[in-house]
Length: 70
Image (cartoon, rainbow, N blue to C red; front, side):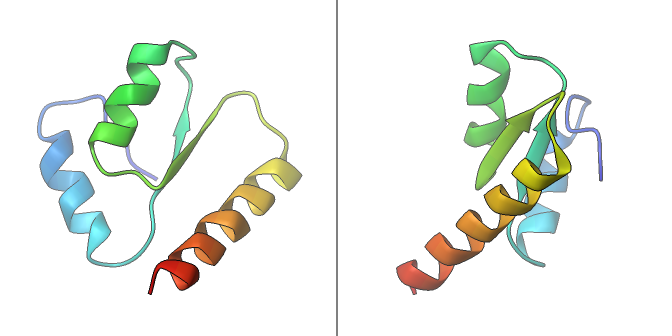
């Protein structure tokens, strides 16, 4: 887990991208923050608070979409 709302966030996300899929956990509920996260190449996002079950289901959905896209 990393805080991407800091300088150099784009570089950090690029480095993470090489190791797999990215699901952002966002404390800020605003649309601009969601757009920012997706613009950084996140595969999906969840706004806090969220249930652990919802996180697991979203990760499974991202993995499923990734496999279908290949």
